[in-house]
Length: 306
Image 1 (tube, rainbow, N blue to C red):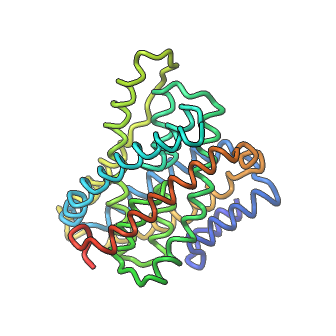
Image 2: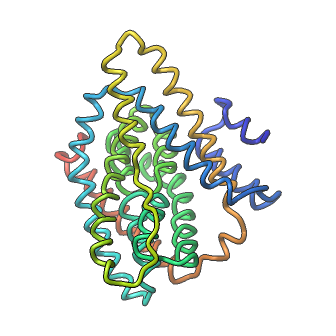
Image 3: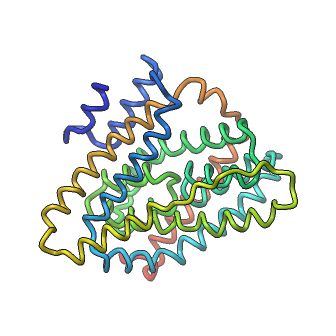
């Protein structure tokens, strides 16, 4: 509790918070790793909505429309590539599908939404979440370093991070360490990418409805609508901008706490669940996505201003 409270202090940055959470869990041991995951997910969604109060609706719509088709192309490309790589790695269909959608859309959230649709068992779900978790942690530290060495602009980094990093938490953490503009744009673009959960879930349901799958409730990303409403409130009530700025600032500090909680949920048991085959599959698929999207944002000015 003391460690979590300390994360609200401005001295702690997102990368430091994640590292401290992982160190805490692997050395002292997290008291409730299972309970931390849903709590972190709920706090993450709340903070993302809070960030919406710091953006105008015009900015959200402009970035959203620009990023919708780009992210759609990336999603389709990743899913197709994942299908081919799964055969190469001789990976079972459920974990291959879960890792592919997690890489294509939004990490753990997409995996949680798709798992009941395809009837994935607990083992496939755990392996997929663990693989994505490890790569998320790597991305949070790797992306800013690569971007700085290539001298990417704030907008370029926002597009790259939003298109190539799995979970919203790591996108926000990486973008926050790169700059204020990168954070604002990356949040919008990442949420636009998350919208693709809906058509992908529907498509997989149609593909697997003839299979004997244990269906369950689907976790739809409804908080995206609340984010847009928050931006609309800022645009409709300009006199309250100072208050909205305060809410957005609190949301940023809350996201640092989220990363500490996520790091604290990484246990030795979770790491032992990752086999070399699914992790290698996830790593290669992510490397292909990261390198190709980096090339796009650097060489295709119509996608993102340079």
